Image (cartoon, rainbow, N blue to C red; front, side, top):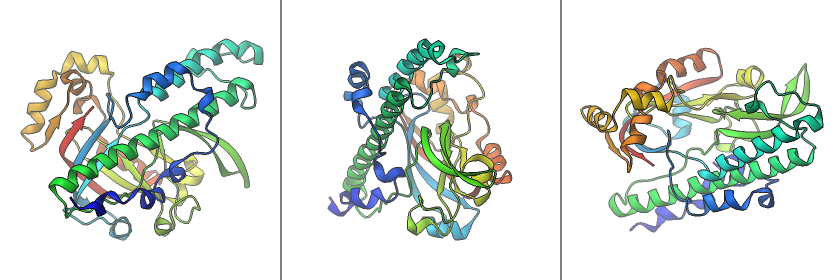
Length: 323
Protein backbone atom coordinates (compact mmCIF):
# COMPACT_ATOMS: atom_id res chain seq x y z
CA UNK A 1 0.00 0.00 0.00
CA UNK A 2 1.27 3.45 -0.91
CA UNK A 3 0.86 5.43 2.30
CA UNK A 4 1.35 8.71 0.43
CA UNK A 5 -2.22 8.22 -0.83
CA UNK A 6 -3.46 8.57 2.74
CA UNK A 7 -1.52 11.68 3.82
CA UNK A 8 -3.81 14.22 2.23
CA UNK A 9 -6.29 15.56 4.84
CA UNK A 10 -4.33 18.76 5.50
CA UNK A 11 -3.78 19.27 1.78
CA UNK A 12 -7.50 18.72 1.20
CA UNK A 13 -8.59 21.48 3.61
CA UNK A 14 -7.55 24.24 1.20
CA UNK A 15 -9.94 22.83 -1.40
CA UNK A 16 -12.94 22.30 0.89
CA UNK A 17 -15.59 24.97 1.32
CA UNK A 18 -15.06 26.82 4.62
CA UNK A 19 -11.73 24.97 4.90
CA UNK A 20 -13.70 21.99 6.14
CA UNK A 21 -15.37 23.59 9.16
CA UNK A 22 -18.09 26.23 9.10
CA UNK A 23 -17.98 28.65 12.02
CA UNK A 24 -21.03 29.21 14.22
CA UNK A 25 -22.17 25.60 14.47
CA UNK A 26 -24.19 24.80 17.60
CA UNK A 27 -24.39 21.04 18.15
CA UNK A 28 -26.46 21.70 21.30
CA UNK A 29 -29.26 22.96 19.02
CA UNK A 30 -29.41 19.58 17.27
CA UNK A 31 -31.93 17.20 18.81
CA UNK A 32 -30.88 13.90 20.34
CA UNK A 33 -33.04 12.11 17.78
CA UNK A 34 -31.26 13.82 14.86
CA UNK A 35 -27.91 12.88 16.36
CA UNK A 36 -29.07 9.30 16.80
CA UNK A 37 -30.07 9.13 13.13
CA UNK A 38 -26.62 10.33 12.15
CA UNK A 39 -24.32 8.40 14.47
CA UNK A 40 -24.19 5.19 12.44
CA UNK A 41 -24.28 6.86 9.01
CA UNK A 42 -20.88 8.56 8.78
CA UNK A 43 -18.86 7.27 5.86
CA UNK A 44 -21.95 6.31 3.85
CA UNK A 45 -23.51 7.68 0.68
CA UNK A 46 -27.20 7.47 1.47
CA UNK A 47 -30.05 6.97 -0.95
CA UNK A 48 -31.81 9.15 -3.50
CA UNK A 49 -29.54 10.66 -6.13
CA UNK A 50 -26.40 10.30 -4.03
CA UNK A 51 -23.59 8.35 -5.62
CA UNK A 52 -19.89 7.61 -5.96
CA UNK A 53 -18.72 7.33 -9.55
CA UNK A 54 -15.53 6.48 -11.38
CA UNK A 55 -15.64 8.74 -14.43
CA UNK A 56 -13.55 9.50 -17.50
CA UNK A 57 -12.77 12.95 -18.86
CA UNK A 58 -14.08 12.68 -22.42
CA UNK A 59 -14.19 16.32 -23.56
CA UNK A 60 -12.51 19.59 -22.62
CA UNK A 61 -14.21 22.93 -23.35
CA UNK A 62 -11.86 25.36 -21.60
CA UNK A 63 -8.27 24.11 -21.78
CA UNK A 64 -6.89 26.94 -19.63
CA UNK A 65 -9.25 26.20 -16.73
CA UNK A 66 -8.84 22.45 -17.26
CA UNK A 67 -5.08 22.85 -16.90
CA UNK A 68 -5.49 24.72 -13.62
CA UNK A 69 -7.88 22.02 -12.41
CA UNK A 70 -5.42 19.31 -13.44
CA UNK A 71 -7.68 17.74 -16.08
CA UNK A 72 -6.47 16.04 -19.23
CA UNK A 73 -8.50 14.20 -21.82
CA UNK A 74 -8.81 10.52 -20.93
CA UNK A 75 -8.13 11.02 -17.21
CA UNK A 76 -10.06 8.88 -14.75
CA UNK A 77 -11.58 10.70 -11.80
CA UNK A 78 -13.78 9.86 -8.82
CA UNK A 79 -16.86 11.95 -8.06
CA UNK A 80 -18.65 11.80 -4.70
CA UNK A 81 -22.13 13.20 -4.13
CA UNK A 82 -23.48 12.84 -0.59
CA UNK A 83 -24.32 14.98 2.42
CA UNK A 84 -25.00 14.78 6.14
CA UNK A 85 -27.34 11.82 5.69
CA UNK A 86 -30.30 11.67 8.09
CA UNK A 87 -28.94 14.45 10.29
CA UNK A 88 -29.62 17.36 7.93
CA UNK A 89 -33.00 15.98 6.90
CA UNK A 90 -34.08 15.64 10.53
CA UNK A 91 -32.84 19.13 11.41
CA UNK A 92 -34.89 20.55 8.54
CA UNK A 93 -37.99 18.58 9.48
CA UNK A 94 -37.88 19.66 13.12
CA UNK A 95 -37.24 23.34 12.48
CA UNK A 96 -39.87 23.46 9.76
CA UNK A 97 -42.36 22.47 12.43
CA UNK A 98 -41.06 24.83 15.13
CA UNK A 99 -40.95 27.80 12.72
CA UNK A 100 -44.49 27.10 11.54
CA UNK A 101 -45.67 27.05 15.16
CA UNK A 102 -43.86 30.29 16.04
CA UNK A 103 -44.84 32.19 12.87
CA UNK A 104 -47.88 33.87 14.45
CA UNK A 105 -45.71 35.20 17.28
CA UNK A 106 -43.67 37.13 14.73
CA UNK A 107 -46.72 38.16 12.65
CA UNK A 108 -45.57 36.02 9.73
CA UNK A 109 -48.31 34.75 7.43
CA UNK A 110 -47.30 31.55 5.66
CA UNK A 111 -48.81 30.96 2.19
CA UNK A 112 -47.39 27.43 2.43
CA UNK A 113 -46.08 25.48 5.38
CA UNK A 114 -42.95 24.62 3.39
CA UNK A 115 -42.11 28.35 3.40
CA UNK A 116 -41.87 28.46 7.20
CA UNK A 117 -39.45 31.12 8.40
CA UNK A 118 -38.45 33.13 11.46
CA UNK A 119 -36.60 36.42 12.14
CA UNK A 120 -32.88 35.75 11.91
CA UNK A 121 -32.20 37.15 15.39
CA UNK A 122 -35.07 35.34 17.08
CA UNK A 123 -34.41 32.40 19.37
CA UNK A 124 -35.67 29.86 16.85
CA UNK A 125 -33.84 31.62 14.01
CA UNK A 126 -30.51 31.51 15.80
CA UNK A 127 -31.07 27.92 16.90
CA UNK A 128 -31.77 26.89 13.31
CA UNK A 129 -28.64 28.61 12.00
CA UNK A 130 -26.52 26.86 14.62
CA UNK A 131 -28.07 23.45 13.94
CA UNK A 132 -27.91 23.89 10.17
CA UNK A 133 -24.22 24.81 10.37
CA UNK A 134 -23.62 21.70 12.42
CA UNK A 135 -25.30 19.74 9.64
CA UNK A 136 -23.02 21.36 7.04
CA UNK A 137 -19.96 20.36 9.06
CA UNK A 138 -21.29 16.82 9.31
CA UNK A 139 -21.67 16.68 5.53
CA UNK A 140 -18.15 17.99 5.01
CA UNK A 141 -16.80 15.40 7.44
CA UNK A 142 -18.83 12.62 5.83
CA UNK A 143 -17.43 13.34 2.38
CA UNK A 144 -13.92 13.40 3.80
CA UNK A 145 -14.47 9.99 5.38
CA UNK A 146 -15.78 8.57 2.10
CA UNK A 147 -12.82 10.13 0.28
CA UNK A 148 -10.42 8.46 2.70
CA UNK A 149 -12.11 5.10 2.19
CA UNK A 150 -11.83 5.50 -1.59
CA UNK A 151 -8.14 6.30 -1.24
CA UNK A 152 -7.65 3.14 0.83
CA UNK A 153 -9.17 1.06 -1.96
CA UNK A 154 -7.07 2.74 -4.63
CA UNK A 155 -3.92 2.33 -2.52
CA UNK A 156 -4.58 -1.41 -2.50
CA UNK A 157 -5.50 -1.93 -6.15
CA UNK A 158 -4.02 1.03 -8.04
CA UNK A 159 -1.17 2.28 -5.84
CA UNK A 160 0.26 4.53 -8.57
CA UNK A 161 -2.96 6.53 -8.90
CA UNK A 162 -3.02 10.07 -7.51
CA UNK A 163 -6.28 11.06 -5.83
CA UNK A 164 -5.90 14.76 -5.07
CA UNK A 165 -9.04 16.74 -4.25
CA UNK A 166 -10.31 19.20 -6.87
CA UNK A 167 -13.03 20.81 -4.73
CA UNK A 168 -15.66 20.00 -2.11
CA UNK A 169 -18.68 22.28 -2.12
CA UNK A 170 -22.13 21.93 -0.52
CA UNK A 171 -25.51 22.31 -2.20
CA UNK A 172 -28.05 22.77 0.65
CA UNK A 173 -26.91 25.70 2.76
CA UNK A 174 -27.65 29.14 4.18
CA UNK A 175 -24.51 31.25 4.45
CA UNK A 176 -23.59 34.82 5.29
CA UNK A 177 -21.87 36.38 2.28
CA UNK A 178 -21.10 39.85 0.99
CA UNK A 179 -22.62 40.83 -2.36
CA UNK A 180 -23.09 44.14 -4.13
CA UNK A 181 -26.69 45.41 -3.91
CA UNK A 182 -27.54 48.72 -5.63
CA UNK A 183 -23.83 49.47 -5.82
CA UNK A 184 -23.19 48.85 -2.13
CA UNK A 185 -21.42 45.85 -0.52
CA UNK A 186 -24.08 44.18 1.60
CA UNK A 187 -24.05 41.21 3.97
CA UNK A 188 -26.74 38.71 3.01
CA UNK A 189 -27.98 35.34 4.16
CA UNK A 190 -27.79 33.43 0.89
CA UNK A 191 -29.90 30.26 0.77
CA UNK A 192 -28.83 27.62 -1.74
CA UNK A 193 -31.23 24.71 -1.97
CA UNK A 194 -30.35 22.33 -4.78
CA UNK A 195 -27.81 24.93 -5.87
CA UNK A 196 -24.08 25.31 -5.49
CA UNK A 197 -21.68 28.17 -5.02
CA UNK A 198 -20.11 29.42 -8.26
CA UNK A 199 -17.75 32.24 -7.29
CA UNK A 200 -15.91 33.98 -10.09
CA UNK A 201 -12.17 34.65 -10.54
CA UNK A 202 -10.22 36.48 -7.82
CA UNK A 203 -12.79 35.87 -5.09
CA UNK A 204 -10.99 35.66 -1.72
CA UNK A 205 -12.91 32.53 -0.67
CA UNK A 206 -11.45 30.55 -3.58
CA UNK A 207 -8.17 28.68 -2.95
CA UNK A 208 -5.21 30.80 -4.17
CA UNK A 209 -4.20 28.22 -6.77
CA UNK A 210 -7.65 28.45 -8.41
CA UNK A 211 -8.31 32.20 -8.21
CA UNK A 212 -6.98 32.96 -11.67
CA UNK A 213 -9.87 31.05 -13.26
CA UNK A 214 -12.63 30.80 -10.63
CA UNK A 215 -14.25 28.19 -8.41
CA UNK A 216 -14.86 24.67 -9.72
CA UNK A 217 -18.59 24.06 -10.17
CA UNK A 218 -19.57 20.39 -10.04
CA UNK A 219 -22.78 19.40 -11.83
CA UNK A 220 -23.69 15.75 -11.53
CA UNK A 221 -25.65 13.76 -14.06
CA UNK A 222 -27.38 10.45 -13.48
CA UNK A 223 -26.19 6.84 -13.49
CA UNK A 224 -26.28 6.65 -17.26
CA UNK A 225 -25.45 10.19 -18.32
CA UNK A 226 -22.50 12.55 -18.21
CA UNK A 227 -21.49 14.88 -15.41
CA UNK A 228 -19.76 18.21 -15.92
CA UNK A 229 -17.18 20.40 -14.28
CA UNK A 230 -17.69 24.10 -14.86
CA UNK A 231 -16.01 27.19 -13.45
CA UNK A 232 -17.64 30.17 -11.75
CA UNK A 233 -17.85 33.43 -13.70
CA UNK A 234 -17.60 37.06 -12.66
CA UNK A 235 -21.08 37.69 -14.08
CA UNK A 236 -22.59 35.08 -11.75
CA UNK A 237 -21.79 37.24 -8.74
CA UNK A 238 -24.32 39.89 -9.80
CA UNK A 239 -26.74 37.59 -11.63
CA UNK A 240 -27.28 34.93 -8.96
CA UNK A 241 -25.21 35.78 -5.87
CA UNK A 242 -22.43 33.57 -7.24
CA UNK A 243 -24.62 30.48 -7.64
CA UNK A 244 -25.39 27.78 -10.19
CA UNK A 245 -27.35 24.53 -10.31
CA UNK A 246 -25.72 21.46 -8.76
CA UNK A 247 -27.30 18.82 -10.99
CA UNK A 248 -29.70 18.13 -13.82
CA UNK A 249 -32.78 18.22 -11.58
CA UNK A 250 -35.66 15.78 -11.61
CA UNK A 251 -38.27 15.75 -14.37
CA UNK A 252 -40.50 13.41 -12.35
CA UNK A 253 -40.88 12.36 -8.73
CA UNK A 254 -39.34 9.25 -7.21
CA UNK A 255 -42.84 7.75 -6.97
CA UNK A 256 -43.45 8.34 -10.69
CA UNK A 257 -40.07 6.84 -11.55
CA UNK A 258 -40.93 3.66 -9.62
CA UNK A 259 -44.06 3.27 -11.72
CA UNK A 260 -42.12 3.60 -14.98
CA UNK A 261 -38.87 1.68 -14.35
CA UNK A 262 -37.63 -1.44 -12.60
CA UNK A 263 -34.20 -1.24 -11.03
CA UNK A 264 -32.96 -4.47 -12.60
CA UNK A 265 -33.85 -3.18 -16.08
CA UNK A 266 -31.98 0.09 -15.43
CA UNK A 267 -28.87 -1.85 -14.37
CA UNK A 268 -29.03 -4.00 -17.52
CA UNK A 269 -29.63 -1.04 -19.84
CA UNK A 270 -26.66 1.03 -18.65
CA UNK A 271 -24.47 -2.10 -18.68
CA UNK A 272 -24.92 -2.23 -22.47
CA UNK A 273 -23.06 1.10 -22.53
CA UNK A 274 -20.21 -0.18 -20.39
CA UNK A 275 -21.44 1.37 -17.14
CA UNK A 276 -21.52 -0.78 -14.00
CA UNK A 277 -24.00 -0.05 -11.20
CA UNK A 278 -23.58 -1.38 -7.68
CA UNK A 279 -26.37 -0.75 -5.18
CA UNK A 280 -27.90 -2.62 -2.23
CA UNK A 281 -31.36 -1.54 -3.38
CA UNK A 282 -32.85 -1.97 -6.87
CA UNK A 283 -35.72 0.24 -5.74
CA UNK A 284 -33.28 3.11 -5.21
CA UNK A 285 -31.84 2.48 -8.65
CA UNK A 286 -35.30 2.80 -10.19
CA UNK A 287 -35.98 6.03 -8.28
CA UNK A 288 -32.84 7.53 -9.79
CA UNK A 289 -33.29 6.16 -13.31
CA UNK A 290 -31.67 8.42 -15.94
CA UNK A 291 -35.03 9.09 -17.57
CA UNK A 292 -36.37 10.59 -14.34
CA UNK A 293 -34.07 13.59 -14.72
CA UNK A 294 -33.75 16.49 -17.12
CA UNK A 295 -31.12 16.35 -19.85
CA UNK A 296 -27.98 17.37 -17.96
CA UNK A 297 -26.27 18.64 -21.13
CA UNK A 298 -29.14 21.04 -21.80
CA UNK A 299 -29.08 22.21 -18.17
CA UNK A 300 -25.32 22.80 -18.32
CA UNK A 301 -25.60 24.64 -21.64
CA UNK A 302 -28.24 26.91 -20.09
CA UNK A 303 -25.95 27.70 -17.13
CA UNK A 304 -23.09 28.42 -19.54
CA UNK A 305 -25.16 30.63 -21.83
CA UNK A 306 -26.58 32.53 -18.84
CA UNK A 307 -23.02 33.30 -17.65
CA UNK A 308 -23.58 31.54 -14.34
CA UNK A 309 -20.71 29.11 -14.92
CA UNK A 310 -18.54 28.21 -17.91
CA UNK A 311 -18.10 24.64 -19.16
CA UNK A 312 -14.68 23.11 -18.51
CA UNK A 313 -14.98 19.33 -18.87
CA UNK A 314 -17.47 16.58 -19.63
CA UNK A 315 -17.15 13.37 -17.61
CA UNK A 316 -18.81 10.06 -18.45
CA UNK A 317 -19.45 7.33 -15.86
CA UNK A 318 -17.71 3.97 -15.88
CA UNK A 319 -18.72 2.66 -12.46
CA UNK A 320 -21.60 3.97 -10.34
CA UNK A 321 -21.99 3.04 -6.66
CA UNK A 322 -25.37 3.89 -5.14
CA UNK A 323 -26.12 4.04 -1.42
